[in-house]
Length: 332
Image (cartoon, rainbow, N blue to C red; front, side, top):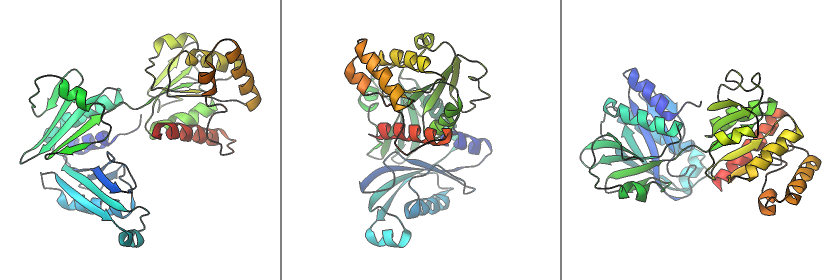
């Protein structure tokens, strides 16, 4: 499983070190990353994740290191105008507001719990107040509170904020939401899957690998996978959860298995459904499914042949094209 920013923060706190979290909270015009992008800068000048690189990131890193020892959050406004673009090499122009917050041991439990929610696909809201007193509070879907106490009469606050994708800064209070990493089901544990899984995990997918062969579907072969399931391709669907936001990649070892998985997947709502194969094989399977009563629109929406068209040939290149296509769907 991919190391998260909160894993790095936990290790720093455990070793008696501190650091600063930088979060883009607003932008006007163009900037390298969207609001919500985070970066951690440790007191030892360790940097994890990115808020866009270039002059913007350099300025934030320097300011974050200088501010270590200051136990109060602060807002930093960075103007990326045309003159700065030319001098620093940035290709973007605009105004970016970055929230810098010190990592303190008293908030360790909040950071650990946020990490738990993100890794286990659970939702939450975390609130950072800095109106004279630096406080952090995590509110979970069942109204469990971790960190500093907060007064809530009902769950309307949670319900009205949980679907906001971007951080909101209001009256010296930053409100951020935790949304589960998109789930990716990879059917097939062959060579292509071996390259898809670590790449997909790296870019933020929570991957489950499924195959009916234990010698292929195991954690030794797929150490980066969130979960590995050994089960019949059709029977396994009773164990999988589908909410309409899942990604499905079909890369099994044979046409019949591909068809079986595609048939079961078309009965579900998915965000992305892709199947590997030659154009001839794909056309035959898709036409067959239309004739047997599957919704023609859903069949036509299948990404197959799978992946962006980059003339990929090797398993590594095919994996890149598939993950790139999923990123494209996610960003759209």
